[in-house]
Image (cartoon, rainbow, N blue to C red; front, side):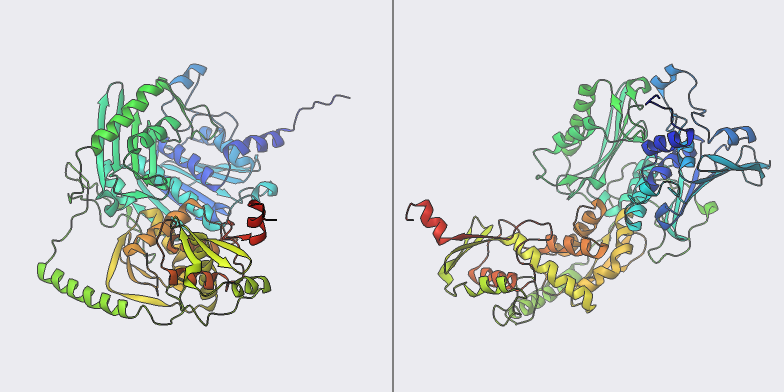
Length: 618
C-alpha cells in the first residue's frame, strides 16, 4: 500500500489559504488590492467582530461581467497575467489568481458585481470552496465582496487570532497604508456600524500624509524628491528632533506597493545613524519608483516582501536623498492646507457624503500646520501663572499623599503581603550612609547579612504597575488639573487607540477628551506624575499599544504596563538618598517585589558569606 497519497482538493485549498489568509487584515489587503486594480476611486470597508464575523469591501471600479464573477473565486483565475514572462513586469497589486479562491475556502464568500452602468449585476456565493448560489442580482457599477465567518471550517486556525481590538487595529493599519499610497482615492472605514475613517480624495501626496499622520507631525517633516532615471524617490521624512519609540510610523512603497524591504530599511537607518539616538525612530513616508522589470514581487505569498535589482544603487539613492533633505533644514513654521474634516468625528458622528468630496488644492510646499501668532500680553500672563503654580507645587512636595511616583511618604507605608518581603525590608538599616547609587542606575543597600542591589527603573516600574492596577480596580481616578489644557493632534492610528483606551486611561488619572478631527485635549494627568513631558507620555502609550510590545493578559494590563514603564525613573537618573529610601520602602510593600511587569528581576542579594568566600575568609 503506498504511503504517499494525493490530498483531497478541499484540504489542499485550505493549506494553500494559510499562505495568503493569515488574519482578517490579510483579507482586507487582498480585497482592496483588487478594488484599486479595477480603477476604483471610492473604497468602503465595513467590519464586524474584528473581521472574524464580517468583512465587506465595496468599490466603484470597472466591475465584472457575469462570466468573470463566476470565474473569479476559482483557483489561478486572474485578469492580470497570461504568460510566465508577465511575472517579470507586474504592474498591478494582485496577479496570482489565488486570493479569492483562498478566502472562499476558509469562509463564506459573497461577490456581487456589475461591469456597466445601468446594467444587471451578477452574484455568486461560495462556502468553504463550494458554490451554493449563482445568479443575477441588482448592483450598481463596481463590486461588493462580503466575507463572513472567517475560519469557520478551520477552528484550529481561528483560535490563533488575536483579540478583537488587535485585529481591528491591524485592519485599520492596512487601510491607512493603501490610503497613503493612493491620495486620489476616497476611503471609508466603519467598525460595528460606527464610522472610523473618512478620507476624501486630495490632489497631492502631502495632503494625504497630513490627513493620516496628523498636521502636527507634518510640522516636523521635510520633503524628499530625487529623480535619477530610471529611479525616482519622493516622500517626507521627519527631522532628527522628531522621533518615535517604534517603527509604526515608517512607510516605504515600491511602485505604489507597501513593502518590508531590507535595503530601504537599512538606507533609512544609515541616513539617521549619527543624528538619532538608538531605539528612536524617525517618521518616514517614502515612495520608490523603479522599472517594473527590476523588482520581483513574486517572492512571498502576501506580496509584502520584494526583491530589488541594483540594491546598492537604491541603497545609496535613499541614503543620500534623506541626508540631503535633512542637511539644511531646521524647525520652521511653514503652512499646510488640507481638508479639516478628513476623518470621522471623534465622537463617532455621521460620515461625510461622497458627493461632497471635492479635490482640494494645496500650496507648493507642505511642511506644517498654520498657527495663530501668540499674543505677547497673554504669554506674559501665562508665565506669571505658571510661576505661581510652580511655587505652590514646590511647597506641596513634602505632603504625605500616597502616590507611586517617588513623592511617597517614607514612613507608615502599607506592610508587605508576603513574609519574605517583610523580612527583607526589616533588615534594611536606617543609616543614610548605607544607601548609595551605582552609575545612577542601581541602588546598593547594606543589610544585616550582606548587600541588596535594586535596579531603580525595574523596581519603580513594578511599584507603579501594582499601584495603578489597584487604582483601576477601585475606579477612583486621582488627577492633577492642568491650568492651560494641552492640545495633541494625533495620527489616525493613534486616534483609534485613544478611542479604545480612553476609559482605562481615565481611571489612571489622565483627563483626555475629543477636540475635533484627530485632536484631543489633555485637561489633567495622574497626581504626582513627574515626567509626563507635557503630553509626550500620552503619545508613548499609544506607540506601545500600536506595536503590541507590552506584556499583560488583558488590554488593561498592557496599558498599565506601558504607563508604568514610561513613567518610572530611568536608568542613569540621579536620585537623592531620601528617594532611594522611599523606592526601597515602596518596593517591599508590593505583592511581588522581585520582578518588573516584563519579568526582569528588580532585586539581587549578595550575602556576606559569599563575599567572605570570594576573599578567602571562609
